[in-house]
Length: 260
Image (cartoon, rainbow, N blue to C red; front, side, top):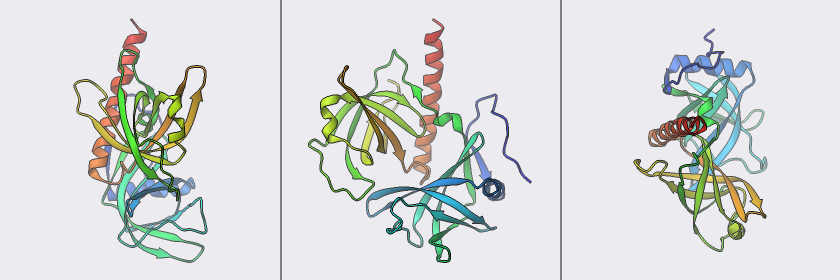
C-alpha cells in the first residue's frame, strides 16, 4: 500500500499536489489509523468548523461523520454545500475543497463528500507557532465579525489594534491592552489585517478566538486566534502558502538574531 513519508523531511519543501488516486490511498491509510479531521464551511454568512470522523472511502466519495458539540442540532450541511476539509497524518497535513453530494442516515448523520481530483500535502511544521522576531513590530488591525456559536452578543467596541506576537499557517497570537478584555470571548470571529514584513502586501484573514490569557502585572491581554476557511478555496490556500513562507522567514530571522 502507498505509504506517506514516515521520517521528518530534512529539507524545506513546497506544498505537494496529490492526484486523486494518491490522495485516496492517503485517506485509506488514515482510515486504518482511525484518523479524524476538521470540516470548515460558510453557511448564511457564518463560519462553522467542526471535527469529523472518517467512516469510509470509495473510488469516488468520502463518508464522514461530523462531530458537533451540540448533537441535538446537526451542522447546517446541505447537498452541493462547498466545504474545506483538513487532517493530519504523520509529518504532513492534507487540505482539500469538496462539496456535499448526499447523506446517509443509518447510524447517525453521515455526510457524503465528493472525492476531489487533487489535494495538497503540507508539512505539519508550518503549523507550529513561530515568535515574531524581536526586531519587528507588526501591528494588527482587527474587527468584530460575529461568533461561531449561537451568541448574538455585541461588544462594546468593534474595531481594535494589537501587536502580532507569533504566527503559524493555522493561527496567530495577538496582544492588546488588558482594558479591552470585555470586548472578547472564546469563539468570537474577527477579521484581521497585518503586514508581516515591511516590503510585503497586507494579509487579510478571518479567525476565531480560541483562548484568552490575561497578564495583570503587565496589563496585557493575549488573544489566541485560529484562522478560518483557508482550505475552502484556491484563494484561501494561496494565503495559506503566504503564511507558510512568512513563518519560514521569521524562523530564519530568529536564528540570525540568536547567532549575533
